Length: 320
Image (cartoon, rainbow, N blue to C red; front, top):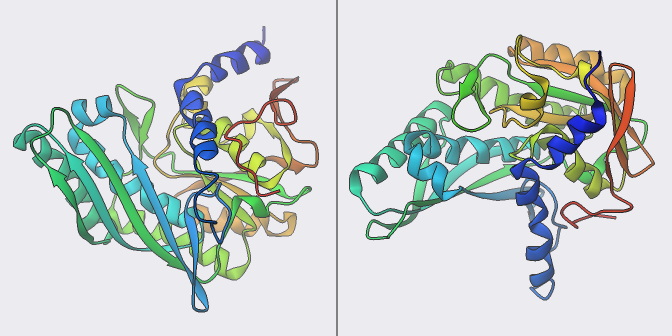
């Protein structure tokens, strides 16, 4: 008997990463009166015109419990996730800064050691930050500056284009959360090579749009992408790259370390898949973009709506 797709969708909706992303609606409302942004929000980075190209600016803040319980990995992730945001916009990173508050030097040292290890692995310098070691709790935020001459935007996807999913399956679960660690034990040269592929493909025109798979999971991240471009998508879950013997539901909630949603013209799909495969990254066609503003999932002959953006906003941020 096939597992129920509507029941799976209901459980995915209850995943905490979804609630965190939907909170963006409240933030966006309060910032409506801020000075106008030259480029719209909703992408993985801010896009800032700079001569003939663009600077990219992104920031990540981390849940206090995660920082308190897993300080070294939190520090590593502070660098890694920001670099993925830069890559998703077709960019290359320039420098990282951090804001660290902590109540004890040994714990803060582990956070900084994790950041330093990621900085060395990805060869991106940490150039400054703000530190308070007399706080009553551990808190971490990390920002990154990058650049690009060929920006990718999640709003640039078009109906009829192919949805491809690129994920590094060569990892392991990093408990207690849904973190798939495909980075901390990997060859640093391979990490850099895979991350550099996205700006290469962007410059060649092989990618039309991209988005980094975040803590909202694959389906939640795709919903944000669809909201940004004013489209829908139909996805066959069996076609998503997944490690052997990993539960599909857990995988759909995972932060995969290296994972991207890509909008690709059909004629380029084979080339894109081959280029990722050459970097040790699984990349497969998982569906296509549609004009109807709904995310439709298919699974074992079942078909159901994951999210209807005409009835319920996700982040409330759209470029349309």
